[in-house]
Length: 248
Image (cartoon, one colour):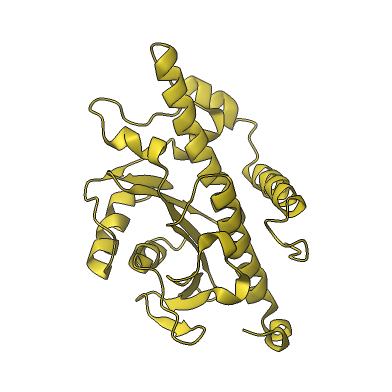
C-alpha cells in the first residue's frame, strides 16, 4: 500500500499503524523478541493483517503488513512476501472466536517456565490478571503451529478463554482490539513475573475469588486499555521507537 492509497483505506491504514506499533512496543517491553507476531482483524471479519516472515519485528512498518484470509492465504501483500510460519494460529483463533479482533503470539521464557514444572501452574496474583479468571489453559503440543490442523487444536485448547500458554513454546493472548492485546500481553507477563518473585520469597498467596470480585466491581476495562495504550505509545514515540507521525 503506497501513500496515494492511504486516503482510500483510512480504517485499514490506522489498523496497520496499530499492529505495527503494538509489535514495536512489545519488542521494546521485552515481551516479544526475534520471533512472534500480532494480528488485527480487518472490517468484514474474514481477513486480517499480519507481518511477513522476513521482516524483523524491531523495524516493522505499516506498509510491510500482509492481508491474509482465514485459510492463512495472502490475499494482498508486497511482492513475494510470505506470512509467518504460524499464521494458522491466528487464522484458526479468529475463525473460532468472532469476539476476538487481535491475537498476539510471543515467547516469553520466564512466563513459559510455568508450563515446565509440576504442580506450579500460572495463577492470578496481580489485580489486572482477573482478565484470565476463567482460565489460562496450557496447550500440550510444543510444536510450531504451522498448519490449519495444528491451528484448530490450539483454538480448541484456548476455548472461550482470553489467553493460553503453549508448553515449552510461548504465549497466545486474544483481545477485542490491538490496543487491548498490547495491554493484556504486558499484564500477562507482569503477572508471571510477580508470581515468580513471590514464590522466591515464600508460600504463594494468589488472589482469592473475593479479592477478584472486589477489584472487578470498580474496574473499567475500556478506560484502562486506553490509558495503557496512550502511556506506552507516548513512551515509545518519545524514545523514537514508534514514529511520532503515527497518530493512533
